[in-house]
Length: 224
Ligand SMILES: [Zn+2]
Image (tube, rainbow, N blue to C red):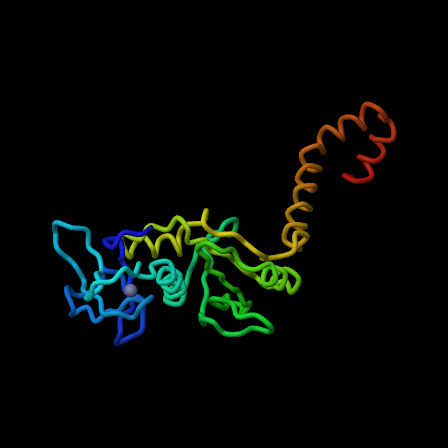
């Protein structure tokens, strides 16, 4: 159960965006409401206590922090142009769109790589993406990433941003590419060639010992 002092995210009414307490003005000037009950929030910025949002009226509302965090993660993806992925490292993207339907599903955030390839992000807190969506991405071979917000720190905006963009242990590649892609075949090919070159002198010596006469004739025919 979240304590009332742990509400660090709110809806900024004028913009409709999720605001972290770090970014808010003090008191009612924050112009924020609770995502869950839509009650007005006061930003409590005092130095003695942890900064947090407080409902202006007495309520038992928990503040909808999980939903707000989910929204904020999408917002951060929308505002960024790069993300670190497991296995593939930093990826640059463009044209992010939130909740835009794609065939029969609605991905949380859709982006494009520089070459125009589409990539889809799914953000979750408790419930992993539905198997239907997972199957859709895999069978359709759509580049897709799942981001797990479960262990995200909510004390500062920077930490949340770092968690979404730079951390990789909280991400899972749903689909990226088929295992037998041309680039991996290329590396296998060059590995075989490198091995052959490394063993060539030994092979030549062996041939010279086993077939001295033929070797000499062959050597002359090549180098004279
Ligand atoms: Zn509330």
